[in-house]
Length: 475
Image (cartoon, rainbow, N blue to C red; front, top):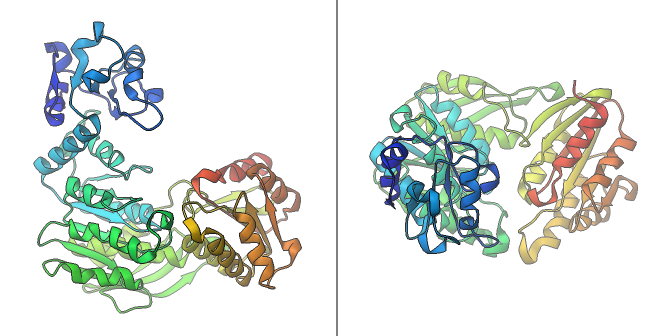
């Protein structure tokens, strides 16, 4: 889309000349450090710095234009005046742009949320809907009131047009009440998916019931007459179906009764495909899911339920699920030299997700030993120490051969494992840093070991994986 048309989407004033107005931006970005020629820079006033301080720098890097608040510019516009788009508030303008683009596009939006696994559900849902049309989906962690509009911005930059897409699958995260409500207001989804309610972000909410209230904002924001996809195995999520009598409710589950279910779940040797039979109101089909664990079967069922809503046949859904792999650091299975296998699940962690990941590796066949590297879990508030200790006891009970806790409250994780009596002090150790944890794994590694690496983003447990790959090499 031309820059002058994009300016209209922002509701921006400008002095674009004919040549500037005819330019088509390569992409939208809020990070001055990554600006490349042709980018449209959005100058946000953040807690740590103000993007307006870097406007001159981004133009020197080749930015085609910048969205700014005039009074925040540190200097007079100078030679770049004809490439500035002026608004009252750049964050609000970014959100308004996204809402305007999606409203004029008018095609189906699926909103995805949940305490754990929402990115996997998003990826699987996009894979399923790709069998019915062209899909725009959230990338990385762009699931906030800034990130989601940047995803929508891909519809009008880089040579793309809204008509190039038939569906949008948008991830919606939150850390406070009202955030998902705002995202739903921008995106106006026709179908919403609530994967689960766990302890992630409990620091900000206090209880899981309050987290459920915040997640339910997605249900409240679905277009009238749309559909909501709910986890029947999670009582808090399943109860959300009563909030909107006008919506079609599609439940998915493994244990509970649901419209979309899995039966005959089986895990292959050497962490191969997870196999199950997908059951839907329209029939059943065999799935060979290239993701490991029961929790990922649940994620796949959520995506399948979206496919059911849009009328896709069970065999089509099953085929799509069988061909969608893990995103980086979200359960990737890596084969390393020396006969070691690593499950890189280092993107994020919370108590529910950690225990499920450990359960998966503990049930995997074809390995001699199971080692868990578990980083401190963040944003758990006043209950953090207790949750770490309880997780440690559960991990020990699952029969791992070595537990390495990394940083901070992971010490409580280790102590909880030791106190359970299911594991010895020599089998549960604490490390202050990821570097130390990596060396502990390296010095104890044996052929046939299966290593799970999981931790919150702030702990940077992916450094353990990087170190293991450097030492042992990839196969």
